[in-house]
Length: 277
Image (cartoon, rainbow, N blue to C red; front, side, top):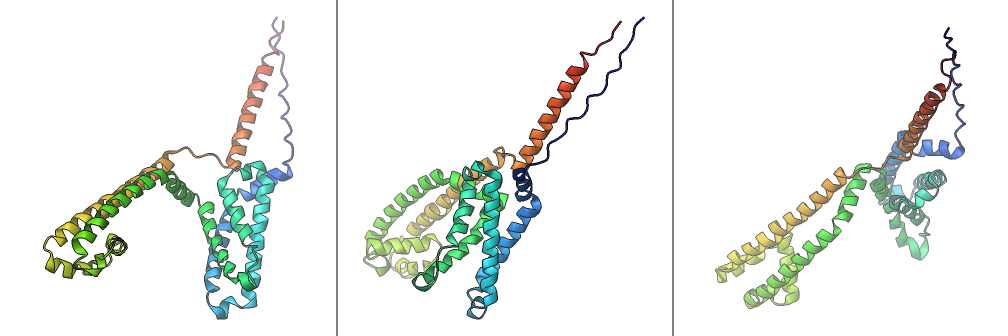
């Protein structure tokens, strides 16, 4: 007669209590903490702007608030270093945050009063705190080689037109009297300023306006669109690139993998208690 042996369910493994590092990681990577830091950066940006008003900026309360904000940023950096250890120093954005906070401790009294302007660098921490801004900056860095090539093309085109306008318009206009003056004038025309200088030249030289229209089309529309195309392509690449999981997400993935391993082991262990005769 067959006898089925009942198998006792395996007792669930006791999970060890989280370590101090894990607790700190959960805090510094939480949305609430990150949102608090972003809000503090924005508030500090407003405070830095208020420092430009002597009646407000020299008030003792403003100095005290500035010291408190700097203290909070310092504690945040210290917690992130404790939480992520070596991973903190392998992240370029973490180095950027550390540098911005460290610069705030540079003495700014007496002859070094001009260094007070370094406080405004704290506003740049928004670039590292907001993921969408990080993507834009990373895209711009990725696009540097393409932008450099387009910049070199623009320099060549500018030089050709600088020499040409100096030779053609120099005798009739002091704005093109030398290479340096032609360079300044063409740069102003490149950004859409100073086109009034062409009115007297166009009255005396009928080919002046068609010549400068060719310059405007090549330098402004073609080159500018190339810059936009390279930057847009870099942004698209950043959008399509796989994003690495945050430490919190990675910890959750590790726990899920550990649970799956436990389930597989429980199933394989249960198979050894078969049906006895």
